Length: 82
Image (cartoon, rainbow, N blue to C red; front, side, top):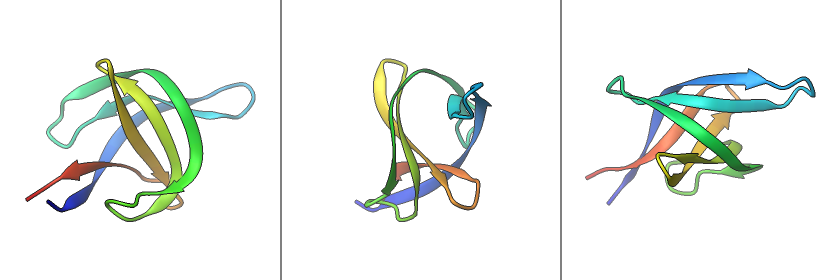
């Protein structure tokens, strides 16, 4: 199964220390999801879908998901496709 890169809209904020934190995701079909916690952030590549940037491991609906912030200032997630 091929993994695809899906660009998503993200609601984010900057802390007073200048740290960028994602707070919510709007999926491609318009569904909105709250990010309840950011578990980690590190510079990484998406080995499945391609692309490189900051990888945020987040908790959404009780599940751990990966959210990437690319150097082109766009956010994406990975989706398994056919």
